Image 1 (cartoon, rainbow, N blue to C red):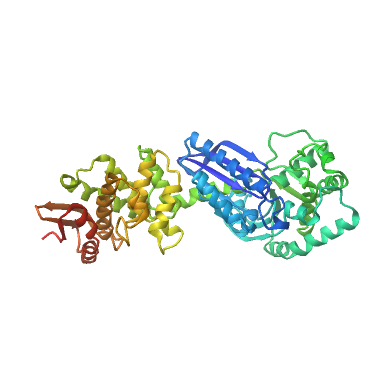
Image 2 (image 1 turned 180 degrees about the vertical axis):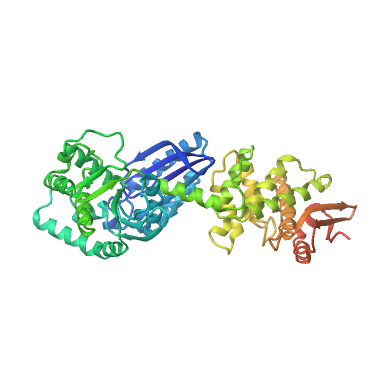
Amino acid sequence: MKLAAIDIGTNSIHMIVVQVRSNNTFDVSEREKEMVKLGEGVFATNRLSDRAYQEGLEVIRRYVQLADQLGVDEIITAATSATREAQNGREFLDAIMKKTGITPQVISGKEEARLIFLAVRQAIALQGKKALVLDIGGGSTEAVVGDDQEVLFRSSVKLGVRRLLDMFEHQGPIGKEALKVLEAHIKQIAHGVINEAKQHGFAQVIGTSGTIRTLGEAALLENGGDELPSVNAEKVSRTDLEKLTKKLLKAEAEERTNVKGINSRRADAIHLGGVLLTQLLQLADAKEITLCDASLREGLIIDYIQQYAKKRVPLPEHKDLRYRSAAHLAFKFDVDLEQASHVAALSTQIFCELSSLHSLKVYEQHILEYAALLHEVGQYISFKRYHKNSRYIIKHARLRGFTNEEILLVGHVARYHRKAEPSKSQKKYRKLSKRQQKIVDVLVGVLRIAIGLNTTKNQLVQEVRCQISKKEIQIIPLGSSTFDIELWAAERNKKVLEKALDREITVLANT
């Protein structure tokens, strides 16, 4: 399986593409990064700027396009503090979904901290010892204490380089008085969290995020070190970081780029990151920090794999790309794939048994199967009106391997699996061609009965047989035990199929 993770951060938007191995580890095959500065001005105006909004949207569109070209099975996406706090953050996420088909999850600071720690402990050998992990972002700083078995403490504070830059409103040198104000501000906000972390105890401090890695690498170079292919697991003393920070604080933004390791895209706020990092290390009584090149995006991948491994149904390795795509979408939206697959199997049996009446072929049979797998995805948003949410998700999810008509039909079948029947009084249904309306009517009727036959979720019905006469269809479920509730539910759900096939339907037990 191939996965991609997109981290929509306040400073940068990152993507990694990984190949998951059979033992649930992974290899990174692609890394992409754009310093969009999505949070520029957000913490002063409470809005994403037009520039950041459009640039962020375009970067994500390119990432999704690349992921598709690389044959990625699933794209996992998370947005952090800038999107959480911006008044137009929801609008931005809706635009991403409409333009790319992915559904970013806005995660809390605590959840961000947990995911970051998952990544760190696979990149740094903790050897059974507890560590404090710090991640300085654009809008927040995450602090986590844990070991290689569990997370003991996690928190997030509203301290980040973009937020501090909005507070100071300029990028130039910072004098002694302003520095005192900045340090006092950091201590006031962070001391409670760091003190709580210290109560859990830790043997080392590990730093992740672009800001910390940039400062760490620059400090190593300033101290006479050579450029390294990777800074992962390298240690940097607090003394060297303090020296570097003093140098950065005295310089204009453009002058900071003359410091080895500092690029122009970070020059506007890196001095503030230096103050924040050194103050956090002072509060933690830490004399050094270990750099780590893993971060939130790796944590998203690890968490996804772990959640998948907990499912009773294994990852689908089906030869049909469309089936794999539908199954991955079902998993993403917390559908019980085992139950959905059972409903799909019952639906297919009924469809085949009634083929002489509806005259539909393999194309429509596959539409039914995918709709059965996906009919409950809308419950991820809300149980109320979830059938409508299911159609919305299917429409915008960019299911790989599907034509536009297939997506349209799958969405409609999922939408009508409950509540209102397909009707020309409904605008979206009315727009379908007569052929498409017939397909939807038949498949919805079949799916409703199959759902009824598994209404208790106990999979008591294992097979379905049908007997057809000129006026009637007898649907006969087969299983190893009684299933009175299933019979009752299927009887209640038969009206759509009766109308579509112009036959009375009776659901009865095999005697």
